[in-house]
Amino acid sequence: MPSSTTASQEELKAHRVPVQWRDGCSALVIPLNICRRKSLYMPWECEHERHAYEKCQYDDYIRRMKVAAKLKLAAAEEAAS
Image (cartoon, rainbow, N blue to C red; front, side, top):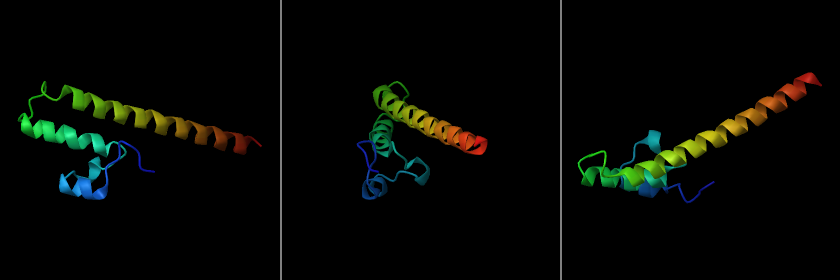
């Protein structure tokens, strides 16, 4: 399911994003990497882009943990009945 934080495969190829970073937050890693290259990886230069990417990663983690909890609860209820 594509969202506003997911880049297309063509964009990811054009910006040479590694496969392990091609997830639900891939559209945010592209401007982050551009900023990092432009500022020679100075950590204080790209704080806004890094924060947006890390927030997306955190929100994705929370979403996956909620889904896992629901699946675990459903499995426990099925085993009990």
